[in-house]
Length: 517
Image (tube, rainbow, N blue to C red; front, side):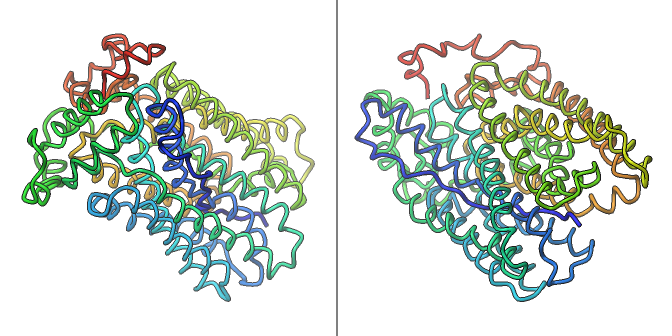
């Protein structure tokens, strides 16, 4: 019986070259370091767990336990995501990435050695805390260390890493499926410890975020990092001045008293006394996380084996091979989105993505309903083909917009003084929705049929499109320090053309870009 999935194989990239080596440090090194920071968010053992659950037969799990295993990681991710903001302001973005990797390493090892369901569940809980840390800090680090011109692409990299991790998980499932059952699923789950160990050490070779350093009062260190990633000392000084203003610090270096007050009152400003622009930012950033998983992505990725089985694919090897196709599709289309996001803009990609999702989910619901109604007789060929093909078109549609842009958009819009805590709450909302779908999908489709479940997701995707169209303005080409100004226009900001058209920020003119933070 096809069963669900898991969410966290940290898959780091090779270490960046030393900052002084490349001839164009402000672009080359910034991109590489932000990219490797984003690799921390490759918490994608969803692929591994979706296959591993096919083989956890020695533990005699039932459907309820399956749903708990699928969703508990994201419930526990709340602990990590809600504490990661304060921790990252305290110890820095870079060490927080390393901490996330260490926590996930411990969880993976516990799952791989689990002798019973309780230990396996405990490992999932520990890994979930690491996932929460990783998903919060990676986009923030990437946004803070990258230049305006490439920020959209760089902050979308966590999603490609998640997709690559899912793909690696699917491939590992296929290769390890031939092991004896008692070893196969343990190997699938335990192997996540290896890349986590590499990341925990490798991230120490990367520079700290200059914005994070300013929040800690380490202004001179922030200036040193900026001089490594900027072309001229004058540019570094200008960017530092902008960052200090955004952080609410004086023009001179922060004193210990100032350092202790950095971040004071952040939660009050966010939830009790936000300004109108901050209120709009929070609605947009939290809302985009809320709707991401209501499109049904977790149901498709985690439960793709069950969906393929319902569509008529019979053997385990065929099911696992089909899930590899899902992983390949997701990865390739997210790469496409990363190439387009800084040229096309966030809104066109996101809204086009949702249009494809609505059509795909509707067709998937039609196909699965026809297959289900034909049982126990032979399913109509058209329904089988429609069901299988629309799984892939759904994954493609999600991956070209809703997947990467959720992280790119939400990591950029917060004011600096609220960014770490805002990102923490956003990730917490994301994980709650993820867990909600993962822990209820089996019960949902048993109550309303599997086709009916996807009709429901299609309707929710329409709501997501309405929300994004009216409440999320374009941020393409805007420096991080200008986001409050973008949202100060009110909800009608969406009617303004691409900000890059109103700000002197030519995409192809790198020298002009240097004048901006």
